Image (cartoon, rainbow, N blue to C red; front, side):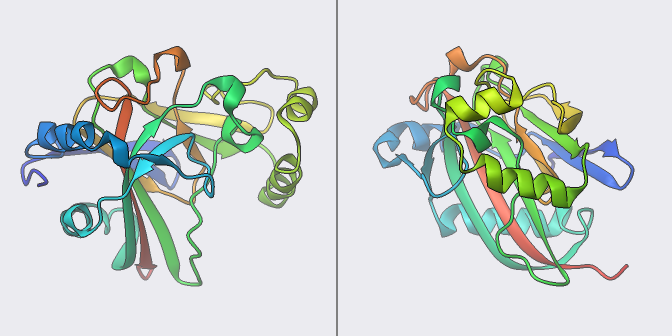
Length: 235
């Protein structure tokens, strides 16, 4: 499934923080794309997480090859030494700005219940041809993390209207940073490109043209997303 001759490049974001870009990631990306198109009825909203759209979990047929590729090429560079668990899904971002919940208008971190000595890594693989649908952007907090987390808990209780009034910005996907977050960089989308990163760092889908989003996997922002909980390598 994954291309053994994929091109892997480190992208520095900040001291001690990198993303890893994999071009030509799948040996046959069109096969997975066509699987998503044929199975469009399987996509459904997942209101229990922050993803602004539809999801479909394929299971072991994708998890197995993804786990093997991650362990062979990316786990070590991201600071892991053993994969404890893996979750992957096909995703389609669909929400328009006025439909976003307050926390969906910000960047986020992947939690997954990691414990001491563990880390969470993540990846996004772009399965769409329209690069204007957007890649992935990375952020650093401008305030202490404890303060940021307290504000997140507060913002999560607000209506969209109250959140808009509090932060002074109309509903939109985060793209340029704000008073709370500094944008470190953007990995642009490209068909069959994957970006792997430390999921504990703040990041977001970099969607600047939401009018182009569609629930149709043939036209929309179709991605394969993976999340890995790993033992942290000894320093």
